[in-house]
Each structure stands twice: as C-alpha cells, then as structure tokens.
Length: 259
Image (cartoon, rainbow, N blue to C red; front, side):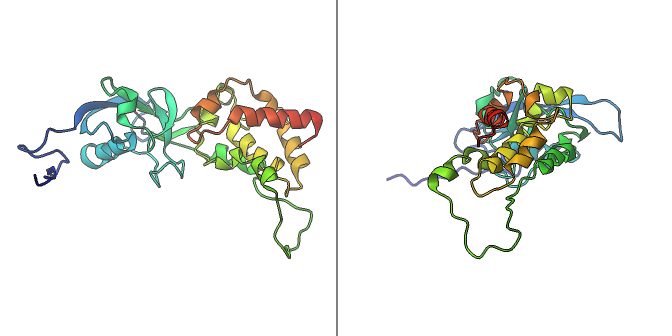
C-alpha cells in the first residue's frame, strides 16, 4: 500500500520542484486604482499571479496586497459571504470577491476588478457607503409597535406569517443590488433596492405596526416608483433574494393598502 505524500510549498506558496504537478495557473488581475493623494483620475493596473483556480478573487487580492503592492486598498471582513463588505465589480458584474472562484470567471483573460458604481470612490476598491446606509436608516429597519413598554411575553407569529417576509431577511447590506441599478447610478437620491428590501422585511412582518409609515416614506418621488424593473438587482444579489419581486410587492401594498 502506497504511503500518501503531501505536496510541499515554498515561501511564495508554489509547490517545490519534484513534487506533484502544480495546480497553479498564471492569472492577470486588472485592477482599477485610484488614490486621490496621487492623481485626480483612476488608472488600470495589471498584476500577474500564480494561483490555484479553485481559490477566490479575494485570495488573489490578498496575494497582491501581501506580496506585490501593499498600497492596494479594499474592504473585507468575514471572507465567507456573510458580512457583505467585499462587494465589487468583477468582470463587469457586481459580486462578492469572497464567493467568486477564479475558475468560474475565465482566468485565461484578464480578471477586471473595480469598485461598485454609483457611490463616491475613496481609494482603489473602497467607496463611501454613507449614502447607502442613510437610505437604509430612513426606512426604519427595526420592529415598531404601539406598546412602548417592555413586552411581558414573546410576540407570537405563525410559520405562515414568518414565511411572508422570509426572503428579505437574507439581506447582508453588501450594496450589490443597489449599485447595479441604473436609476441609482443616475440619481443618488433614489432609495435603492436594498433599502426597499429592508423596508419590505418589516412592512410584511405581522408583529410590526409601522407599515403605513414605511409605505409613505417609499411613496416619495425617490421611492419605489423610481424602479424600472430591469432585474439588475435580482441578478446581482449574492444571497439569491428576489429583489424585484419584493419591490413589486411594496408597490402593490401602496396601491391596495393591503399587506
């Protein structure tokens, strides 16, 4: 019976000569760089990496930052598709870098990485998220009841009532949906899909009592009626939320006042 042999790697992360064939391939990362302290315009910069195609775009960005250029700036936290902080445009589509595998985006061509659109770029892949979070705060994304006192018992809810808004509880506030929206690109005053999704989550919660207030907020000229139903937001959502459907349900609730 043969004894299993583990591949050894050198300090650069490549297999040492004499061991199993390397799984690594050469990939070009083409990154849109912007440093306001250096130049007023953004530029594209290429980096070549030896990387396992089963690794993620985030792993490639780490290799660039740690081994090639420590000035590269981007956000990331959990690296497992939960925090939503590493949303960026990869090959022209909004994605989470931590969920995008190299092998799935044609590594034979340069992999383009740039910041999400519609928000001011602060440096490299980092954008100013404050307008996005302000829209989120404006829709009052928290449970509101008429009883201001601490409840003496739990607020019961049936499984059917919970299912009514289950899809929109999945939002991780990555802004991928909002910054994929052409209306948002052209008018930063639009609440955007993510804010509407988070309003939906409470409008249709049977325990909440502020649905009318939220509907009036979204009935504003910058609210749900700006949506053009292009489905960009649904396509961009890394959590698979049916964003366009949620927006349509909020529109219907505004017309019928039934929710």
